[in-house]
Image (cartoon, rainbow, N blue to C red):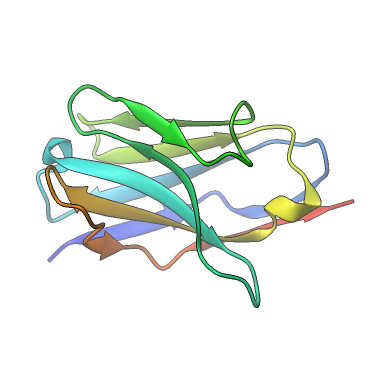
Length: 119
């Protein structure tokens, strides 16, 4: 049974930083691309960042490029999102997701962690 559990969310002032973590279990972690998505109330889910399984190639959404950094530790089955220069518009529930290499979709999702940025 695949489980993805996010942690590290919280409340921070604009300009501050947070580090999100996602603990994965029940899958061969290195064989999965991992992603971060976010959803604010009343808005569609947005792509934040992704990282491939073995080579660690990264991609970012335009609104977070240069401020957020995605990384992973395959030995620990962990995914991270380092968020800096946070803005109120970054407020959302952040979810991690796993997609098998070669799959066009993310197959597994975590429950999410709330990030609130105050101005």
